Length: 281
Ligand code: PAF
Image (cartoon, rainbow, N blue to C red; front, side):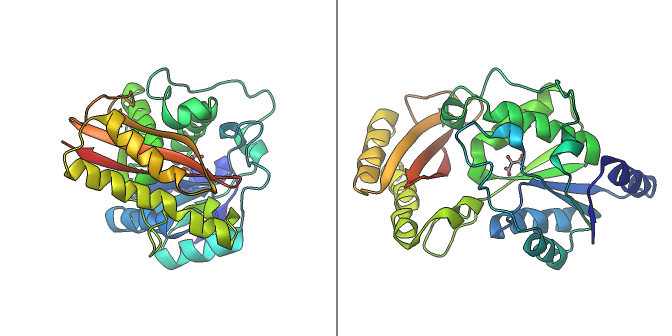
């Protein structure tokens, strides 16, 4: 497995693979890899001849008071995990390689980003769309893999690929959880023991929401109120949002009908965690 830091080198390699008729699977990440990322890489390994993972903590998708500087990094451990899965290449550029002096072109989206994380992190998806477009242009993959834990991100990327006629198949992969239910996330590392226990309120509330819908609660106001009340039982939790939106448009819905995404962001101490489920009714 190679670790490459420049666009020039990766282009040369990818051109050669394409000349040989090999298909390329791509897993974009910000590193500090866990089993969630591993599941994406394993899917790519199964379905493609070559697998490229990128590790790049993208400054453009972090707001001013967010955790860019403290975002966890461990290239050595990440490389081991990638190697064990059979990733062929890690692309690990410096910020200057991705954003040269004078950089002033962006990819942004009007729809799909007004609710959920787009509402509480206003510049986030502009940064995500811009960096993912750049990475797609650099790696030119046939397929790219994203986790459903960032369900809004997955919807945004699918829309961007469709709107901008990018010839890439986007594959969404299920949320991977710890044994006790907490969704795997690089940010879980911020939690101390007490916060780690308190963080279980997210997955418990996800299960509660699923059960309520099974029991016939299809009015989203009622559903969201019950979910918020459950989160409020945990003193360390502070709700950013709990919402039910259409999976296609990421706009709020009054009823559970069609494909609906029920998503939440909750602060446990200073750590902002997200979780969700998708339901078809
Ligand atoms: O999901 C992430 O880790 C990031 O948002 C991504 C897609 C790698 C873009 O920086």
